[in-house]
Structure formats: structure tokens, C-alpha cells
Image (cartoon, rainbow, N blue to C red; front, side):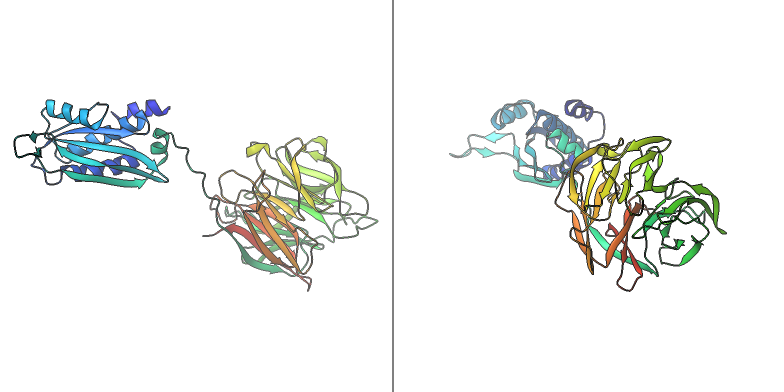
Length: 434
């Protein structure tokens, strides 16, 4: 609906909240100290005709609600003409109001004057009826901003924090969210070099599956690495996982009784893309995957081999984003659904995409920059930007990330796994402050 159509509709529809609030304040001042049932004129100026008409309509309704016998709009070029017309119409008083937007406020200011003037009472004309100053303001709502043709302010980015959750007594290669017990709330799945762990948010182990039953590669990789994907999302009950040290990965089903194998995998699942799980093979003897991958049933090629790949979720991801590639050279780059690079690569170690604000805008969650050591860092960068929205020091070395709605708030958290000097892993979450 255009601003003009919206303004015209206000004659028969309730006034928007901000206009109604300002009109109520002005009306209360406008009838104060007047005899019961006054006949009033309303002359309104504003930055746009739409706002002037809408404000006059709201004020007339408010004056009637406060006992005015008549409240008539006055159409005049200036305040003097408005007074002349109000006097000719037999009105007792005239409300002259200027309405506008000041910063984030909808404001109204003006006066109430009596329309009858005694020109014979001394040298100075004596205006009959008590005059009054009128002023009101209230926070501007989107409708008021539209009528005033003022762009709505951009929402402030959410305030984020890093929350420590629990520790895992082993290195963590990959993280995912999955509903392991069928209660509709996700648990945290952690892949270690020797086991798949299913954990509650407090760190309690609900189930685990040892990897010793999977066939091993003849030549293990230099550094442990792997992939873990929930193919049905955080509220699904399946997991796909593999490490580069095993010749095959595994698909499992989870329920309240534990973890159950449903078959073996021929590749390493990197993330969940628009066409399903993205699968890759590790380059022999390394912790690098690709560049050839499987997007569901279709073959595709990454711009270059990756250390890890994360996804923005559903096919209609905003800004056309689909993937975030983590390269072995310590950079991360956004990719479109067809794996084509989008924008420059940023310095980063481990990385993920997360809708931290619950608005559909996917932020880049990046570790580093700099070599990982006793103290790592995490920062959150909006797509297309380089300056971080949030950054914090993380003890240890970040080895894995995952994102999902862990608490059922409609906002995702970014889970971080940070390897500690003693060999265990601290799990924490970047999330919106409560």
C-alpha cells in the first residue's frame, strides 16, 4: 500500500498507534479548561500531505472522543487564514498543529486559540477564550515513518556473548545438532577420533558409538579430521559421519535406546546443502577434501580443496549464499549454491554460517586470524562486511564449529569446539544475550 493510499484509509480505519498516541495527548490539552462540548477547528501542517491528513483525521477522532461537539478540519495556506475560516464557521477555538518526525520520535507542537476577538476592548485586541500551548511526542512506528517518508532505521545488530557449556575428554573433529531422543529438542553430536558422542547441553553423554568397527585406511592422515552431518536438520534423528582415517563412514539412526547403524558411506559428509548432504573424499594422506564433491546426486567442483565446508541451510538462503569454504591457507570464502565464489576471502581458521539474530541473515562465524595456539579467537562478520560485529578470545585452539537453534528460541547459536593443552575439548556457544 502506498503512503497516499494508507493516509486515505485512515479516514475509516483506526489510526496507527503512534499517530493515535500523539493525537490523544494533543486532544487532552486541546479541550482542557474549555466549556463542555466545544466546537473546534483543526489545522495541521506536516512534512508530507499524507502525514498531515492522517494526523488531522486522528486528532478529530480524539477530540470527539473527549467530548467536542464538533471538530472540523480547516484547509488553509497559513495560520491566519485558518483562524479566519474557523471564525467564519462559527467555531469556538482553533487547534494549530505542526506534526513531524524528529529522530526516532513522532512529535506534535502548536497552540489553541480562541476564534473570537474583541477589537473594541482597549488598544490591544482581546481574544475571547483561553489560549494554550500544545505539545506531544511518542516513538515513531513504521506507519508514521512511511507517512513522513522517513526511511525506517536499520535494526541494531543483536548483542552477542560467548557462553562456556561443557568439556569433552578428547579432541573434537566435528559438531552437529540432532534430536537423539525424539523429544523435539536437539542434542549435540561430537565426533572424536575414536567415537561418536551424543551429549546434552550440560555435557552429559546420552549415547556413544565407537569407530573401531569401521574399516580403516591403509595410510592414515597426518592429522585427525572428519565430517558430521544431520541430514534432516537439528530436529532429525539421523547422522552421517566419517573420519579421514577410516576407509568408510557410517549412517546411523538415533532414538531413546541409542545409536543404530543403517549403512556405510563412501565419502566424508562435509555439510548439509540445498540438495542434501555434501560428500567429499580426502586427498590421500592429508586432512584436505575435494575439490570434487557430491551435491546430493550431482557431481560438482569446489574452487579449490577445503579443510571444511559449512552451509547456510535452506535453498532460499538470503543474499544468495549457500556455503562457506574453509581453505587450508587460513582463509574462508562465501560460495553460492553452485559453489562459485562470492566476494573476497577473509582471514579465518575454522568457520561456519549462523543466523544468530533469527532474522534470516546469515553471519560468518570465524576463528582466528593468526596461527592457532594457546589462545584462539572467534569473530562474527556480516555477509559483505569485514569489520566484526562481535569478537572474543577463546582459550585453546578452535577445531570445529556448527550452528543451529539449540534452545528453541528461533535464533541459532554457533557451537565452538576448542582443543585444550591437556587434550580435552571445551564446548562453548556464541549466542544472543538473554
